Length: 90
Image (cartoon, rainbow, N blue to C red):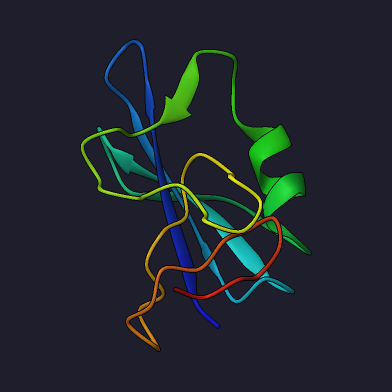
C-alpha cells in the first residue's frame, strides 16, 4: 500500500515521505528536489525531519474513523484513505 505524506516547514520548505510502509523515502521537494534519506518505516523518516515541519494542511487527509489518528492520507494504489497508525482503509 503506497503512502504519501507532505510536510511543510515554517520557512516554506516542503518535504515528502513516500513509500509502502516497509520502505520509505524522505524527499525535499521545495526549494529544490533532493533525496534526504531512505528509511524502513514512516516513523523513522518523520524523526529525520528538522524541527519546524508539520503535516501540510493544504493536502486533504481526514481523521481515521477507527483510531482517530488526525490525518489519514489517500493511498495512490487503492484510492482509499489509509491510516498510518492502524492501517484501516476507508
